[in-house]
Every structure is written in C-alpha cells, then in structure tokens.
Image 1: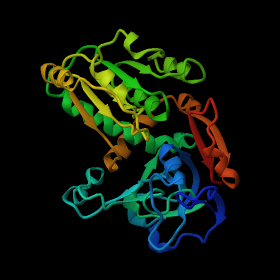
Image 2: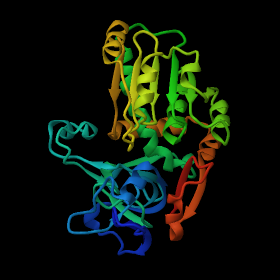
Image 3: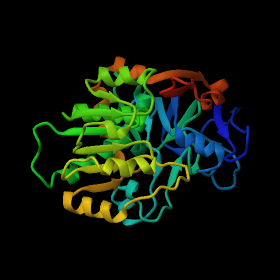
Image 4: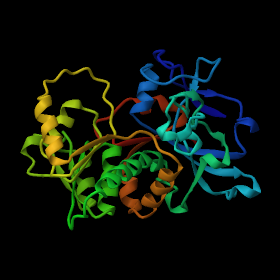
Length: 346
C-alpha cells in the first residue's frame, strides 16, 4: 500500500512510499484510509520543529486528521464493515488523568500521538486502530468527515469556555469573537453559531473565500485593525497563536469574559506589555484566559454531532483543495486561497 512518509527535519523527505499492510497487533479494527487533512502541525513535523518517528525508525507515516471506512471489526466493537470512522490521535500514558480517559490533560507528557509523536499516523491506504480509539461518523459526512479531528479542538475549547462562563447567569445574546479564519477558526465559529452566540470572526485577509464562509454561517467577518472593532465579546476563541493579539483582545472583552487559546505561534516576536494594567483589568473584570490542547473521546463525539448538524455544503467549501496520495507533498505548498487541504488516499 502507499503511505505518506517523512523523515522529520530532513529537507525534501516527504514522499509517497510503499509500505507493508498494517499488522493485526496495531489494532483490531482494519480500516481503508479515505483521506487525511493537512494542518500546521504537519508542516512543523516535516520541518523538524515538532514530532518524532516511532522508536528505532527515522521515518514517520504522517497524518492525524483521518477518515476511513471499516473493512473488518470485532463483533463486540459496535463497528461494522462499511462504517465511516475517524481514528483518535493521542494514546494515553499512565498518569491519573490518562487513566480517567482525560489523556488531553496528561500530566507527564509521555503520551504517544499518531502521525506526530512516536507512532505512525493515518496517512496510509490501510490502517489499524483499537476499537476504543475509533469514532464512528455519519454516512452524510463521507466527503467532509476528515474535518472531525480539527473540530474536536474547538469542541474542547467551547467546553472549557462554557465551564468557566457557568459561574455567572447566562446572557440573552452573548457575543463571541473568533480570531483567525483558518479551519480551526471557522469551525470554532460554526460551533459558536450552533450555541446561539452573536458570532464575529476576525482575520487579516479581506478577500478570498473566508468572508463569504463566515457570512453564510450567519456570522460577521472583520479585517483591518482589531482596535477598530466595536465589540465587547463575552467569549473568545483565539486561533492564531499571535501573542500580541492575545493582549489586544484582553483590552476589549466584556466583564466576566473567557478567552480560550488554541493556537501556538512558532514566532519569536517581542512585545511590550503593561503587565500591571493587564493584571488589574483581569482582576477587576473577573476575566479568565485558558489554554486548550488536543481532545479526548468525549470531544470526538461532540465534534461528530456538531458536523452532523451542520450544512454539509458549507463544510464541503472548507475543503478548498484535494491532492492525490501519489503527489501528497504538493499539499504542503500553501496556495493563496487554501482553507483546508486534504490528501485523498484511495
């Protein structure tokens, strides 16, 4: 079978290579790989800024945003041949959080992540997975189910926001601000609209597909200077990882606001911050800033429900480019109007 391989940190090592079919020891569910999404983490793994191959190997099968169709599964797994499934990315360590199924809160950092850290990913024409790490998705998501893993990121983010916001009475028309209109930002906006927020999305670009995608959600798109936005958001999902933007957002939020950080920047920008003023503003406003990374099975199930309830035609427009596996390194070259790039494995 063909697989998407890379030697992390070695230039020009991304290739489609022949690999043996997965061994039964890798999992009791055999899956025909259909598609994987490409994201910033994949770019970092290719560049060597993040990630590691399995022990004893120099190469890694990449791909953690998966979609496949079950070929075979145990009778007691709840899965059947023909089911669409997504593979969970992280494998737990043995800390107290991991034992409780909350491996996204791992205390040790000794987890494994398929396609990223210590284990082959889902970028192959066949893969195996233990049944407990496979999540079934609706047949209606055959063309868009590859968006499920990035949706888990924002499902968890909104879970964190709502846990903190539950400390005060609910507002009749809460305002949400999403910073960044990449796939994570757009999916965060989708979940905000589904939750009844007056949703606003801020991004630096003013043309291309993003403004219309936001408008078609019933949300409002903004570009230009953040300071020009006449908003006082109650909830913010920050999806750019730009540190200066985080501090700028903290100056405009409503009282009791929650800012959830989901992006990580690889930059090294230095900024001047009025730390005492920021401290006073957060204390007096009862504001909270929380970080959110990865997802556990609960968030995969939440994401599956969110996508099933979305307009599939809108979801299809998020996937702006599809690349065949034989030429998958082309997916790493960003195009001006890219939103989500997907590699077709069939």
